[in-house]
Length: 115
Ligand SMILES: [Zn+2]
Image (tube, rainbow, N blue to C red; front, side):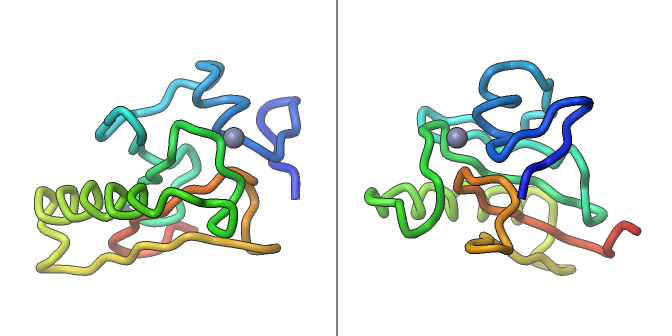
């Protein structure tokens, strides 16, 4: 599924818009391998995505599982910082036809759903 961004369509929002700098994002955390930022079309009260800087299409293409460890380290840090351990949170990665942007990413969400 292609995502509509302005007048352009992309199947890889992260490479085409975020890492290329075409879209400015609100960064939460950046490491050598990963970027965490506020989702540009937030689906929840709190909604960030944690994205590998390297292009990896999806979970089944991921070879370096240490990256998952890093993702969860960042997620843990944010959960503690925001106090979501006392309210609620979930971490999601989509695949197959659930996955809009064909670049591996993890959602960390908390609170109610935005309409
Ligand atoms: Zn990509």
